[in-house]
Image (cartoon, rainbow, N blue to C red):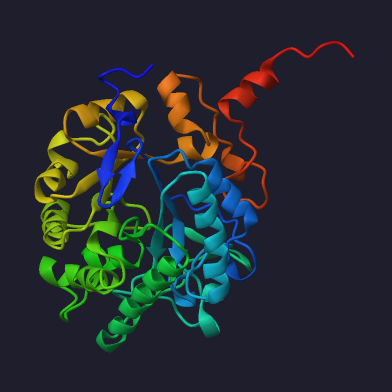
Length: 374
């Protein structure tokens, strides 16, 4: 039974959407797109199984061939991909769910084998990712050294996101999330550990934020701002990322996104107790600067999520691996039932194993019952 303390299972109004609970399924790359990086019926089943989430955010979805950097990741820049995503959105909506597409360009997190004509990947600056490797059609390879986008090329990349938004709308999505986190292209412009530009897209915080804000302006001409969210990771070092003053940078970003009335800000930062010095936490500052809904992500348990909601630190909480392994995660958490453990070995493999074969609560209980003798 739900109690007054169970805010996680209470309804929430997100722009025009009425969410039945405050659990968000976080975007998770699963590397199971079909031919031409188009979603298939298998992907539709995966998302349909998880439609009890208050909101689903899809796996990261590249807005152009140039934006790809992983095997079998879906795109949203071709008609066949739109048709594949329509299978997904129709299935989720039939099951009563709500789903946003996460729009993505990997930037320098790529290899020439993914790039049209085997050209160099692009980034804010010509700095390669160190100490990590790309999984390519040719095997594991060091990330390729990118080239810095010329200033006159940047409007074309902005247009790729705008086209992705149009295609997401045609595919039936309820909204979109811009992937500005985890060291991908937008993040490569935001953070000064990578952005070494000296033009209007580099240097000051205002200049480094310009690329993101131009994309926001473009996509909110397709979807209303109350159907657009942004994901950021202010202190994450994934993909060899850093910034000299993340609080100043992302405080500015949050205020600018708030002024543009975006529906949510999705913040990746480890939950309290895992994030080091509490004085360095960025989430409380973003809560102050952003007037829309704030989605917290970062290893939350049921108890930590409830605490964050009760304290007003967040409005929604997103879960990654728990949703991956538990298609009925809201019901399991509500009942305080055991969770399926995720099978890490199948996170990025092919086929239904470790993807659509995780049992629901009743199925798990039935499987555990002793079988009658033959």
